[in-house]
Image (tube, rainbow, N blue to C red):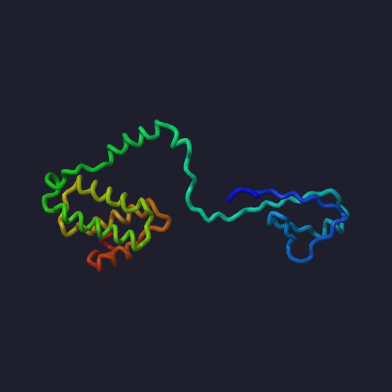
Length: 186
């Protein structure tokens, strides 16, 4: 049998002596179905072959790991170099953010994790949202009253990047008990 997601070709030789299937398709040993037509038998055309392409439905949404990425050291070196550019600085509470304390960040990120858990988000959605959250806080000072709005926006962006079906602004607004409106998130 062909591997999952592959295309299998079944060749069935037919002759004028073969009778056509009148009922449901006849089943072969491997589960493939074949049907011979009345036209083949009626015309007396011998030694024809019928090719049937069978597509199996694949339930797996994820791509297989690329073995070249694992074995090539340049990939890891490049990822390590890029990681240094995207990691936020830990000292933004004292320099950029005067109004926000680390405990406030902890409360909002815990809330973001609960939203991701309840909405069954992909594994990478929450870490990406927190990375966006911290990078924004490193760059621009914001008021403490906009911290949950920032959490909603970063969750929305991360879910649009990492998920097949991203979170909606209405769902995020509902998780804030409508303290943040969908228009504010947009």
